[in-house]
Amino acid sequence: MTIQFYNSLTNSLQTFEPLDPPTVRMYSCGPTVYDYSHIGNFRSFIAADLLRRFLELTGHDVKHVMNITDVGHMTEDDIADGGGQDKMQAAAARVKEDKKSGKVPAGAVENPDDPYQVAEFYTQAFLNDARALGLKVANEYPAMMPHATQKIPEMQALIAKLIEREHAYIAADGTVYFSVESFDQYGELSGNTIEKLRAGEGGRISDDVIASKRHPADFMLWKPDASHIMKWDSPWGEGYPGWHIECSAMARQVLGVDTIDIHTGGEDLTFPHHECEIAQSCGATGATHFAKFWIHTRFLLVEGEKMSKRKGSFYTARDVFEGRVTGNTVHPAVLRYELIKTHYGANLNFTVKGLHDSAAAVRKIQTTYNQAVYESKSSAQIDNSHPVIATFINALSDNLNISEALAVVFSFLNEKNANPAEARAILESLDSVLGVLPPQDSNASSSDTTEGPDTEAQTWAKQLDTARKNKDYALADEIRQKIIDAGYNVQTTKDGTVIEKKLA
Ligand SMILES: [Zn+2]
Image (tube, rainbow, N blue to C red; front, side, top):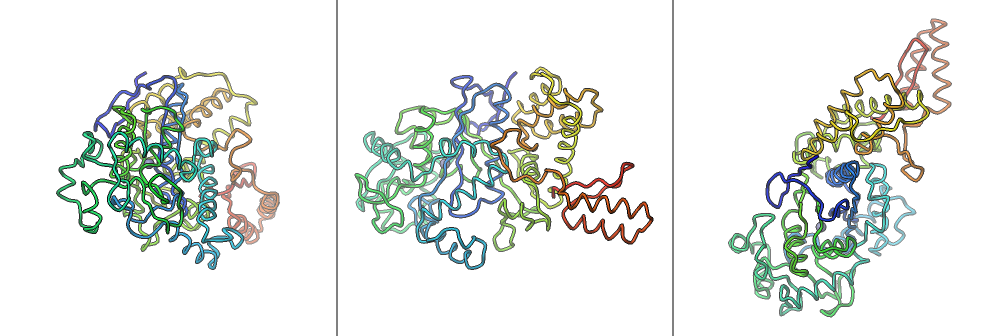
């Protein structure tokens, strides 16, 4: 079996072979914890999870690291010098407002001016959302999900190494910069070479800052600033690290190697963030590659348009779960399915209609699986050579071709399967990648609404049958509506009324 992925570093489809098989070392840029993560963020995180799960199904031992950015970086950190407002201070002000409006529970974040409390609150919110959405790495917190604030010494060691190897320097104002001219490969990922940057840079940076730097594209590694809300001692003065350095430091420290197999992230991170990660990591270690494969997820659109705070389409995962998008609560498995069903290399158009289609798809997978579990106490023994699994793997081996993989799933669901033990095993294997069935293990998410209807609703279903039997259709309609309003789908079958919790 040959596995191919599209590598952003070479702009081509390439055969994937781990450096140290069967281990795959993979790093994904993770959430910032100044706010709830939105569905565009989650699209990228779930794409990495799908990749990881596929590699695991094909026998790899995936060591997956995802960082948590909790250092109070600046709102304009995407430009080289960290201008703008401190993101943690901005978050503190917003949390105070959100506590008044109830968006942040009154008991949470006792002191919003303490950035660690704000970060802790949003970290826990992220972990809850991520676990509900089946992100395996969230179950490995904190070992595989380190906080940037816990890795300051590792960042400082990397900065010291870069100074020693003359890839970094201390400017007149004390700021430590990476020297892009010292690194020949700069621009290899994004195409933003030093020559191109010199022509375009400068508009938003003050002349003072430019004067203190050797090249306008040199980016900050350490900023001495005793007035910053989060600050640490360092050989370069009390201050805080640049944003890019945390990923280079954490990938190396947690994964333990200079060159990793795969680095993932949203396409918006390609430049400057990922370009700078490469410069720092290879500059400090001398390695030719920081990551052999760079896999980027494209944008998420909402109803065909860019997500927009102004238009109210900047949806968080919990906006979707809690019914603020569709008017009904949405099961996390449905959102997960919606976010994986479009190929990672294409823009995903998130729509309410799409969510309903995803709910139907998830319902079908779950119903077939529940039926198989009902009919068979255990799963048959199958392996990846089983024709259904082999075809599924074959589809995903082709640069994670999810449409073809889902076509395999649905053609299997549409067959009449004689052997429930085998059907059960097949679905468990497929779902080890899809992640839409309720978790099998006990420590997994408990945010489940797929459990059976509550007893009150079941009583109503019996009353509905009785009313029908008595031909009291007015009463039957009334009860039926009551069941629907309580969040159930109602079906009339030859065995009477069947009710199921709505997924979306
Ligand atoms: Zn990163």
